[in-house]
Amino acid sequence: MLLGNPDLDCKSTKGNKLTIKESIDIHYKRLNKYGRSGYDGDMEYIPRGGIYIYTARGNKSYH
Image 1: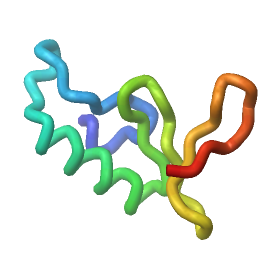
Image 2 (image 1 turned 90 degrees about the vertical axis):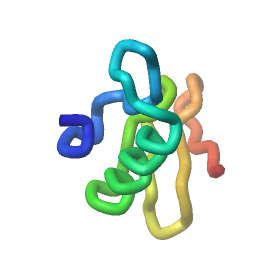
Image 3 (image 1 turned 30 degrees about the horizontal axis):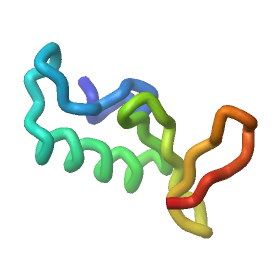
């Protein structure tokens, strides 16, 4: 379910029973497939210029 929906947060928690490794794997698979993925409360995007998130002010912050 998490792999098919890039809008859901895939951070590992006790509630979703994911290990950190599983969580990161899902995150990067979604980035590669959809160009975006939610992780730890942020939506990350992967355009031509690299991975970025939108800050609270609406600016792009590259990782």
